[in-house]
Image 1 (cartoon, rainbow, N blue to C red):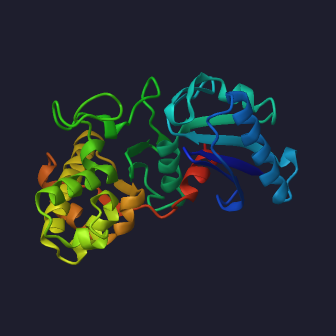
Image 2 (image 1 turned 90 degrees about the vertical axis):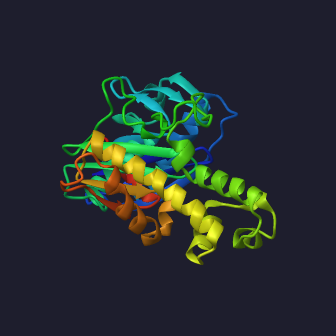
Length: 313
């Protein structure tokens, strides 16, 4: 029997057929189209699910469930997407609409939650009973696994570490608040910090890397320049690492998981990211004389979303 996983993204929707060994045996995708009505969006997703399953040689009766990870909040009991700004979805009946096209059990959850679930079962945190998954990209996504299950909170809105207040009256956040953690620890934050530093001091390799166009500075620019010991990049990166260390210490102080897993674009820095975080974050942990969670890089990559979504059943 097979399960279908759907990873709903702002630019594209990825679909995968997952076998009993949690392996992706077929994949499909469609571009995200927010300009069309919700019912048409779901019809296109369902059509892609069917065609992807057909490409794997499956009959409809071999599909036992469909799961979807969305960049927003879902009511797990009703299958209603409560809020998904990237898609323009607000209190829309995802499950009910999808089942008009494929009448199988349908489950939905937050995309970071399903990625956390996938890593905890088929990825780097497999074998643990508790873990926290953090994606470091444009923003900060997070998912908490406790006793092998996703922890959503009572109202389904728990685990949003990126939007905990890090600095009172700090930098305005896209969510409408100020000083949110992701304004200091995301890839976007690293880019902002670098551009501000370059505006004060143009004597840096980072400018040469982007042909003197400061608007082209990316997170990778800072990391690559810091690897080459560019003084300004090293300074910016050290401040960024300190912010990350405080974030991970807060996670430990609050959740105390067995392991913390890092995904997202910044995680591609590998040990250049892990080593300084591991050195620094213990000093912010309350019980620093006790064992603390190991921090690891996620291994499932882009498949985490579809594997985790398929596992929701």
